View 1 (tube, helix red, strand yellow):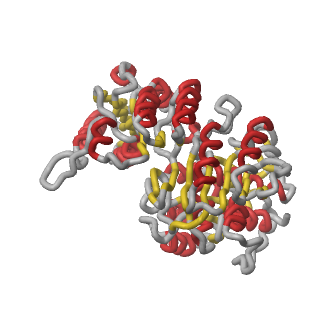
View 2: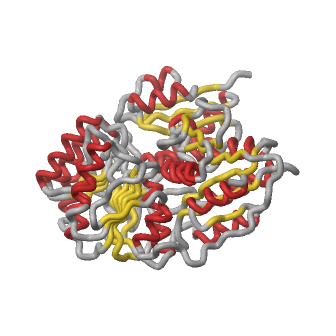
View 3: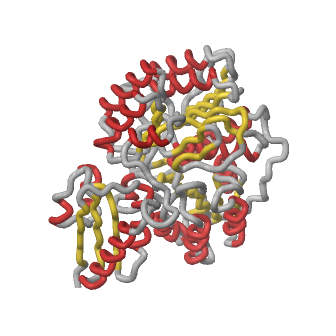
Length: 495
């Protein structure tokens, strides 16, 4: 019997994408459901649903302001049952009704009237409308964090230029992580306040550095996400430059860390010149970049771990915790399965520094794209669209990584399976449990060594120490950082 595809379009209903991913995960876990996705009906999202085999004629008629429920189930009865549950989740009260409920404003104007002392607006609407809302915010004297994606590049540039003229900061679009005055926003961690300010183009890079700083005894003044396109040639680092200026003026910030993949030479020169003028020490981590000339107040490092060490004034760790890595006879392959794109990039940098050949679906300079060579250690960013089409991100649903983990565990040529676990607000309640179950369920006599790291803190909802224990109980080696995990994997294959 062929599968049944069922779509329902909810006109004019917008729900935050993180909530929709959680709903999708819940529906996909129902009996008889093969796949499920709840998405706004933007052209990009409709393309994802079509490629995933989840779109029917009903869903094809959705527009950017509509919500699409898409289900593929083994038969019509199970598809209908899943649709009923999806409707229940969408219609459940969300703090807007009932005794003791908090009134939630339905417009930016009403929100500003309710909170006249607010200084920041978090924008999470369909990309077609995000710039208009962010423009309203900056014109009302607010900084803007744009969680939304699918914002046209030209509109991003125009918005950021206007924000600069008004003395406002725009974080994003597609800004998934920030910490402002100690408050974690979107995918971020609960950490102590301190003197280190972070500027990052990626969410997991900010999370790793900020959490390592906290574990080294430091704290975070602000962590500012600028969006993945800000340091590109078209945008030219507008928000990065504004963030440098703001952290220069900020009395709490004593040290600044910048994290990104390598910008173009022109953008790099512009950003480093501004960093050299802020009057505070700066640590620069452009992952995969060659050594560069730095301003007198700046120092270049090559891993997120080293960025954290420099930020707290430690030249190098004095007591690194490193176990005896067992020899693995007859096997040399490393496979990395990452939920964090920047963590995947950092692992590539560590292996490349050991003169290993690396291939990846998101290669940094020096690595090869998947398919370019038969040999080489394979490191995959499983948050890439190829793995998440019609499905939640692996930070939200660990099962996205479950299949690749089980496949790797059965590969007789594989020496090491390398993985990251990222916790905090927005992440799955127990990502370590998902990885542990996939590993133990597929482990055989010739299974590879499994090495992982956990990005997060004990103040996070998942509790980092508990996540570490879950992994260790499953026989997984847990390194103190992602860079250490990659180095341990490198040592295990004899380089």
